[in-house]
Image (cartoon, rainbow, N blue to C red; front, side, top):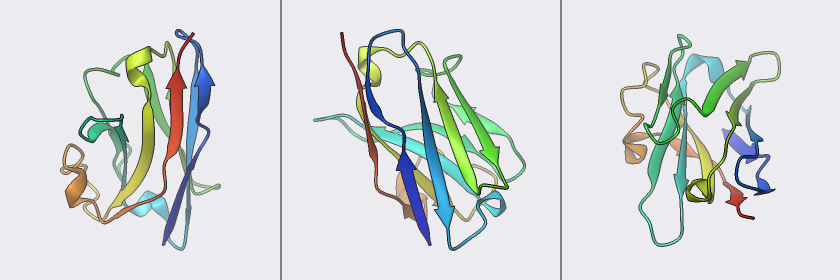
Length: 124
């Protein structure tokens, strides 16, 4: 099982990035896939989650700006991030939850696997 997050970078406030979460060793549309982020000196924060059924959950801080999608052919989940703010700066991680309903999306410690993260920096 492997999840690889990519697509981070440096962007100005108001800009956009698209993060990718590529899966190998399993078919990700069988599970819930979540994103968390962690900024220096801060606790991990649940950002969003895509359930097996295709339902989505978003933290209030990103609702209306971030959008999840899934490409089953590429076995990849995407997190489209628009109107980025400096407070979005963090390392972003994608994870796998074998509970496919998204019940654990605010509890990253209950996820089964987290991949390596990708740095997102929002700064002018």
